Length: 279
Image 1 (cartoon, rainbow, N blue to C red):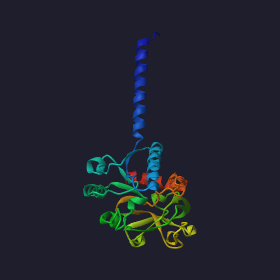
Image 2 (image 1 turned 90 degrees about the vertical axis):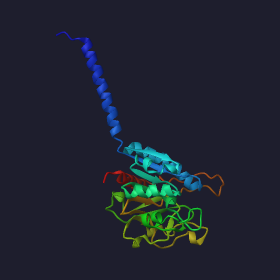
Image 3 (image 1 turned 45 degrees about the vertical axis):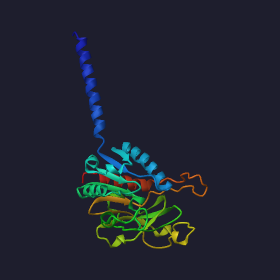
Image 4 (image 1 turned 60 degrees about the vertical axis):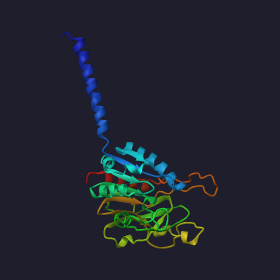
């Protein structure tokens, strides 16, 4: 049988092109949703350290779990046109301050958007540079109200899972170690809010929590939620997001990593994948 070499070559080229296109398309289809992280990174060295770490970590996790992670410090991007391209919004360290930004975010959440917040993104204290002047966000959406107090210095804590059946806490042990953090207490009792589902709280085995030097910076008892969701929205708040810094040695070097504990990382990824899902 005589084989026409030119036909064979053309078939080979065509098949190679098809396989290349199929591979590129398959790679693109792996990206299931897009995430945008908003940050300020100007106010506290510990928060700035966390922001830089978080941006790197979420980018790395995106490659592993098939989502696209972008970040911006331009809060004017918090508008309907920009947000339409993203399935999930993350506040890494602060909150929007202008009325148009706030209204755009509220509309985004009320129309099926998803949100994840860390540590200082829930902070509000009147009087301060971040007063409680946004009732929908602090009282309805987060449910926490104003900041109450904090532990010092940053320490690890044992967390207790409060809802084993929730997707965020799926496959986590009943208790696990959280990374070093400055832990917040809030004005409102989240246990009394029927819309709030507490996912993790400080376990009593953590007490005393904090080292001082001020006595009020050490917690000896009480109930402190640190991860929760509002069942009226697709959202999760994490109290984590404050790295330990070398203030005393005056090097201002980062001494800890928020993403150093595997169970805590699993909880964050669980939350991100749940928030990014279609349900």
